[in-house]
Image 1 (cartoon, rainbow, N blue to C red):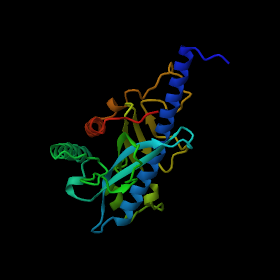
Image 2 (image 1 turned 90 degrees about the vertical axis):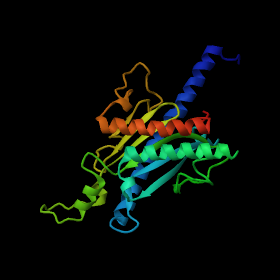
Image 3 (image 1 turned 120 degrees about the vertical axis):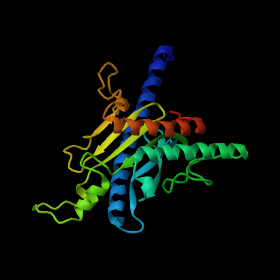
Image 4 (image 1 turned 90 degrees about the horizontal axis):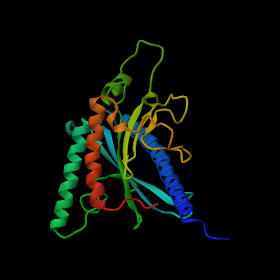
Length: 258
C-alpha cells in the first residue's frame, strides 16, 4: 500500500491530537465532579470540629504515558484541601496567596541550585490525591473545587442543614451543589456546576474547547470565551487561577505530549 499523502498524514495527526485532548477534557470533568462531591462530604462530616474544612480546594492535573489506555495516557490529580480559617474563605485571595507561594518556592529552589515541584518532596503545595507521579508525568493544568454555589456560601448552606426547618422537606449534604474551575495547558477553560438533582450527567458542564472529538470546528461554541463570562466575582476567580496556572506551566516547562 502506498504511503498516505503528507496532507492526509497531517489531518490524521491533527485528528489524533484532538481526540487526545477531548478525552483528557472529559476525564478532567469526571474527576472534578467526583472530587467536588468528595470535598463536600468531607466538609460536611468535619463541620464544626477543630478539623473543619474550608470551602475551597485546589487541584493540579498531570498526565503520563499509558499505552494500554484508549488514548494512551493516564490522568493524575493532586489536591490541596484547606482547614477552615479566615485566610481560606475567599477564593480569589487564596489563589493569589498560592501563586505567591509557588513563585517564592521556585525562586528559593533556583537560588539553592535545586529543583522544585509542586508535589514535593520539598515545599509541597498538595496534601491529597495522586501525590506520587511516574517519572514521565507532565503538567496538564490547574483547577479549583468550591462548595460555594448559586444557592449561597458553604457556611450559609452548612448552617442551614443543621437548623430546624419549617418545611416537610429536609435537605442533606447530598442535595447541595458545587462548582469547579479548570484551566488546561492547551488553553481550555472548563467550568463544572455540579448539581446532584440535574436530569442529565452532562448538565452544568461548559468548556471553551470541545469535549466531543467529533465536534465540527465550524459549529458555534457559546463557551469559547468562558473566562470572560459571568459576573465580576466569577471573572476574578478565572484571573487568579490563570495567574497560578501560568506560573506552574512556565516552571514545569512541558505540557502533556499527545
